[in-house]
Amino acid sequence: MTGTPRCSAAHPDDPTECDGPAVVTVLDVHNAGADGCEHHAARLLASLEGGRVYPLPDAPAGAAIRVFTAADTTRPFCWYDGPRIHPSQLSRAETRRKGETE
Image (cartoon, rainbow, N blue to C red; front, side, top):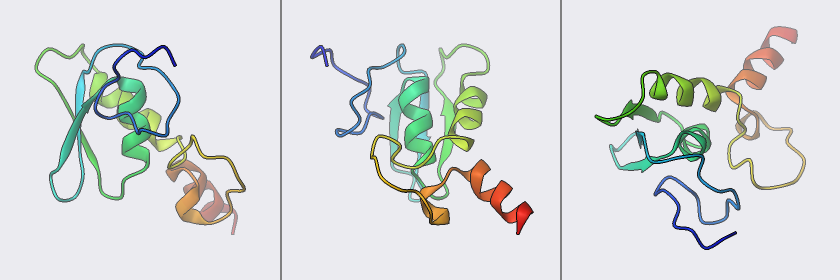
């Protein structure tokens, strides 16, 4: 990492850089939130149960939808390696597809 400050949605163990400025707020089920770039917000949303995403006032059009859509195919805590076999370790899209084949 370059030492550049990252958005508050970036997990400390996630080695990736931000893809731009903070454009959305991700809220958990208790309404605790973090502002984030689209990249880290999608990763955070994918790692939460019952999370929600809202655009910040100056966000580009469609930012929250892009984050929501990306989170659907992102595995929770995707920066961790290892086998992913339990539904809680798969993306929501993978879990839906697995349910359709059983």
